[in-house]
Amino acid sequence: MGAWQWGVRVSVIAGIIVLVLLAALIDEPKRGAAEEIVGAHLQLDGASSFWQDIKSLACIPTFLLCICAYAALVFVTGTLTWWEPTIIKHSIAWDLGLNDTQLLPNDKKNK
Image (cartoon, helix red, strand yellow):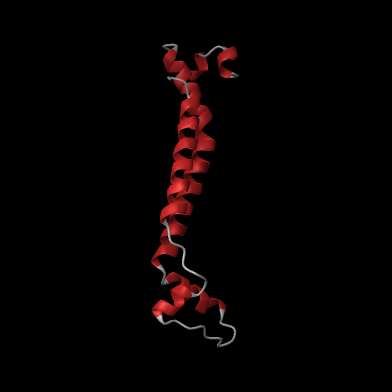
């Protein structure tokens, strides 16, 4: 069970369990039911300006948190794609007991 493939297998099983639990336990309201509970109603005041839309979005904490989380995700993904080959080379050099990646044999560098 020491192989990396087990992580993929366990993730699929956990995902299926969560999907079944969500389908069984989450009560999805009928369309428009949430608005009736709150007492909200649709207002058609015409078109709003770009800055009014930005201002209304900036007042939603969940939206702002999602934007920050997505920016962090993109940053981390870009950082990993840039630095991961270097980290792998350093790891191989460390395993071989070398102090510098320049000392790696060519067959290990091109792996």
